[in-house]
Every structure is written in structure tokens, then in C-alpha cells.
Length: 549
Image (tube, rainbow, N blue to C red; front, side):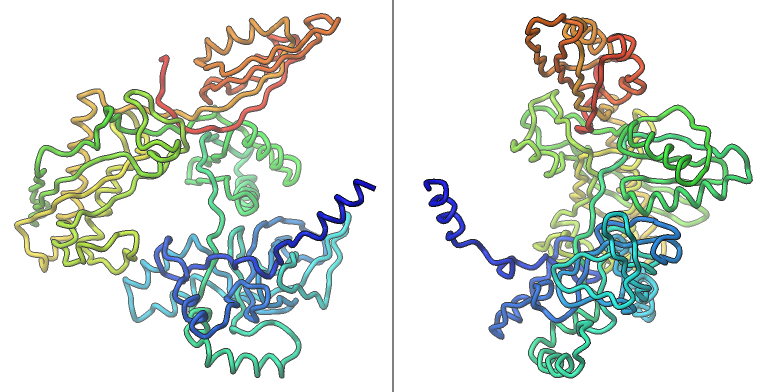
């Protein structure tokens, strides 16, 4: 009776309605990444309409592709690509025509439109094509039946076929702002009323909006693969292209001589190679795995950053054209890297073990004034395609030099390059001015990095893994000694109680942090140490300074 009372009390408690959940944050096509879709929300609030795009009751169709698989020959899926999508608002029907908008091409679309303003609209159509849904699949217990009159309403998940160019993280919009419902009369009348009331929102829907998409972790391990024969190379390329679509964390780089695949670890690479053999029937030869390293600058405790010794001047004559410019800049820790552990900065000599972030280039107020920009504005609130060619060249030169360190051919990470001051004897109207800005920025970064190498203030970052090892209690000492040789740091050892059994059959747990390069092929070594009874799992933790070499 007491339990029944508690149960009745629980079910009588008020719980939030799914319709009260805030809609997903959208981004306008061609806007900066951090500029959310705020204006449409304000317009609708002014009209006393709380239903925004993405809300389950909103009539305009918005869907998100969260998974892509290839199931060739099943359910009449054509080339085999099946896109799993969630419908946030509106209705998605089979045979609907949809616009496929990819967040990853947003920046490239903006750049292309700035180069040719007259072809801006054509660039949008090219980058975000219109595709027709070939049908929907019924996924039930391994059955993949084709639903000829399939329909998916807001809040539901569907499996779509026929969308050949769709990838994970894409946003699907209809070619018109209306929903895909069959009640055309009600739809048209509602659309006409809404169009007048929310004209700003309707225009932005037609211009293109997209969800945040999927952010994949950067690869930490690279393997060279080669087909067994030249005739198999085309099949290998096709198979890797399909696997890369299904797995966004898999990076494939092909050149006329080599094919490189990069992923999140040794197990990830083994799964990809196994799928190549098992699903596609492609046998490959593999090279030795190569670990992805990075470089960064070591800052002393309390140090804000390191900067050039005044203005660094670049003055060269190339092909009869003078390139002259002066740049002063500072390298400091990226805010995301500094705040990942909740502290403003780690202690001196103790870099954080975090996933690496690509360097960013920021502009000071003086630099913004030099290029006729608002000195109080932030670079994150602007689209770079609106910058002048000389300013884009300046940013390109700095970023290019940050892609290759000085201790090895490794890109830099977790740094912010703050351009403090820029000057040149050339006129901004000179055709060589953008080239001078690019060369001056690259030379300033290179000069600063070389001075830091001479001072011993640059380090190599290597990927480290959190390792859990299940090992017989009697073999714990051997495993710990082996981890020490592999430059591992033991975090915890959970010794199991024997309970009357022998120590060779009672398992203990060892948790450690080990560099990825040291545990490649560790499964064979662990079996030898433990007589085949040991097992381990590894998870990528982040990059940390290379030590113990």
C-alpha cells in the first residue's frame, strides 16, 4: 500500500510537456559560426507567436540527418545510401524534394560568393543542391521494407533513400517554406497568413538555415594502405569513400602514389580494415601506423604570451615587384585550452592533456583600424568574406605559418596568434599589397617561432590514452613494470580479494595514462605477460607534452 501511494504521488507530479522544449538553435546560411538565429526569434515574439522554426508545431519542415549507412540491395534503396533523419518541425513525405544544406560548406560558400558577387545565388544552388527523396524504409527487426506512401511528422525518426549527396550532420529543408502535408487548402491559407506575419522568418528559411551539425574528433593515428594490385585500387577508393561517409571521424587522403587513412586509434583502424575485407572484399597491405603529433609553446607561470621584438619587417623584391610590410604579433594560449580544466592557466611546465585545437588568428584594435574596420567589434561576429583582400591575405599568411612547427613537420595547436600592429610603405591600392601582407605575416610568425626554439620553449604534443587493464592479481607487478617502460603513468590499481582462489585466477584492475605510440600492438605483449588472461581497453584522452625520451 505504501509503494502504491508513492507511485501515485510520482505520476501526479507535473512534468514538462515536450512542446515546451526550446527549438534547436539555427544558423543563417553564410553567417559566422557563433551568430545564432536571434533576429527571427525576436520578430516572432513581437508578433506574440512563441512557435519558432524547429518547434514541433511549426509548419515549415526542418529535419536533421544524424546517421548515414549503406545497405545496397535492401528495400529498393538504389545505390544503398540510407539517411536516418529526425524531423524537428513540419512533415516529410516520400517523393518530397528537399534542399540538402551542409554546415561544413557554409564557410566555403561565403568565400566563393565574395569572389564573385554576381554568381552568389548560383553558388548557393551549387553548394546546396535539391534532391528528391526516393522513398522511406520500414526498419523493424532486420526488415527493410519500402514504404511507398511514407510520411514522417515532427518528433519522429525516418530512414530515407535516394539522397545520394547527403552526409551525417546535414540539414534538410523543403524547396518551399510550407510543410509536406497533404491538406493543401489549409496549408496555403496558413502559409499566406504566416508569410505576412513572419515575413523575415519566411525569407530566411528560403535563403537557407542549418543546424549546428556534427563535430568529429580529430584523428590521432594514420595508416598507409595499398591495394594488392593496381586493378583493385579503384575498388579501394570507392570503398573508402563510402566508409568515410558513414564514419565522419575517418579521414581519407589519397594521392597518385599513396592512400592514407586516419582515425581515433588502433582499434578504429582495425575495424576499418576488417570492414574493407568483410563487406567490400578488398584486401590491402598496410604500413606502420603513424601517430599524429602537434607542437605548442610553453609559457611560464603568469606569462600572458610571447611576442615579437617590436615590428618584424619583411622587404623583398620578387620578379621585379617589391613586397614590403611590418607586423608585430603575440602568441598566447587559446582561451578554450586554458579554460578546459576550469583554471585560467596550468602551472609552469605542466601542460594540460586536452584534445588539440587549431590555432586562431585575432586582430587588435589598431590592426582593425589600419584596415578600416570598427576597432570595437569582434572578429568572431564578422564573416571573413567581407574583409578586404589584403586583410584576408594577412590572415592567410599567419595561418599558413602556424600549420608547420619548427621541431618537426607538425602543425601547432592550442595557440592564439594576436596581430597587434601592421604597417607598410606600400599603398593599399597597390596590386602587390595583399602579397606583401601575406609574406609579412608569415615571416613574423616564422621569426618568433625560431626564437622560441632557440630558447627551448617549444614542445611536441603526443596523444595519450586512458588505459584500463584487467590482469590476474599475480601478474600485476609485471604489468606495472611494463607500463613504466612504456612511459605510462599509473593512476590507480584496484586489487581484487582472492576469496580462497589462487592469485592467477583473480582479476585486478589497473588504470593508467600511456602515450598512444607506446601501446600500438599492446594486445600481444599483454597476452605474453599474463599467459593470455589479460585484457585492456584504451580511450583517447588528449595531447600532452612528450616526456621520457
